[in-house]
Image 1 (cartoon, helix red, strand yellow):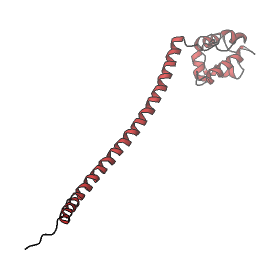
Image 2 (tube, rainbow, N blue to C red):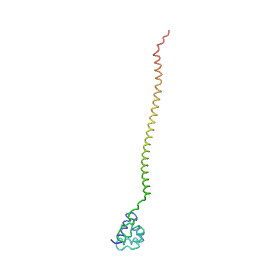
Image 3 (cartoon, rainbow, N blue to C red):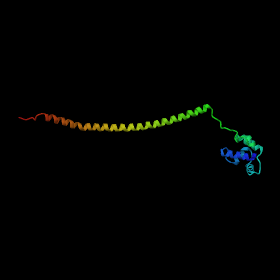
Image 4 (cartoon, rainbow, N blue to C red):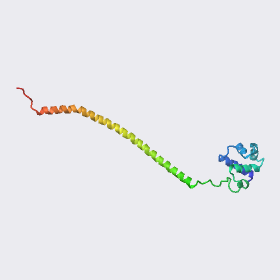
Length: 160
């Protein structure tokens, strides 16, 4: 595989990773005209040293791979690993997110309980009012029954 072929692979790699939008943007960034890039794409021209150099410098492409095909296309063979403090912070954030979820669920349950308690308090007030009303309605009857009971227990008065 030639340098020009690998150069075009670099373009497709950058485009698929959304590091460039189109051929024009890529050409301008590495210091060649869009028409020169088209010539390279069509095989009518080979890539120049300055375009290779600018590609390596601007996009962190592995120069060894671009020139020889050895190693990996990207100069970063492995993504950087977060250090321990970042990992600990991420773990702490995840735990706090889980705790927030639990607290929100508990809060929703408490809201439902409050609604139920208010509903039951309203029912209790209505029942107490009904009981009071029944007592008030029953009081004259009880008083009347007491008078009747007293009258019935006394012998009738005879006038002489």
